[in-house]
Length: 212
Ligand SMILES: NC(=O)c1ccc[n+]([C@@H]2O[C@H](COP(=O)([O-])OP(=O)(O)OC[C@H]3O[C@@H](n4cnc5c(N)ncnc54)[C@H](OP(=O)(O)O)[C@@H]3O)[C@@H](O)[C@H]2O)c1
Image: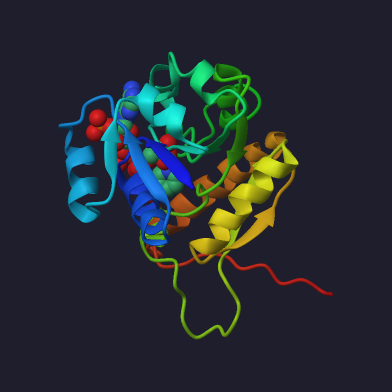
């Protein structure tokens, strides 16, 4: 599958590397091909192609958005048509002062959807630190996989993202429509507080246990 990344820093480079290793054709839609994040991602995985954001989105079937939340309007400007009908995986999190949710109402993902109304936005890969995207393995738990909560309104788009989530070693858990992204964003704030403020460190995730 042709997959494009807008934003290739901590989160983008970890996911792009694993998706390329899984056999996908992965491109970076870079505003600056010489930026340190682009150079580092290509150094990590030489198969990543660097194109302009427009070219990279035009050829993609799925686009990952992994930019700082406040950069989203600039990062998506001019890409509305190229993203129409495509799956846009929103990896971004709005994080406010003191690790609060900074938006007056609704979720960051719903704001992303407003920026590119014809794209099929699915929130995924947001509730843990990037270290867990670099290495999602938690040996010693048998078949139990770490859970990756996803949210989105388009059922087929969500199913496609769920398959990618699974390929990367996670158990996809459907958390509901895109409005549920708000709760995933709070989940992320909890994870950051536990891991980075209260000293637990980045090496933990959640799993889902269900009665059959
Ligand atoms: N860090 C984590 O553990 C983590 C975990 C889950 C979710 N998230 C969320 O994921 C997103 C990315 O986090 P990160 O840690 O990967 O950030 P990062 O390492 O700072 O990388 C940000 C990337 O976005 C690009 N970018 C910045 N402004 C841009 C713009 N206006 N247009 C196009 N590209 C732009 C940067 O490119 P340049 O090199 O050109 O600046 C860089 O490639 C954030 O929304 C964050 O909240 C982070």
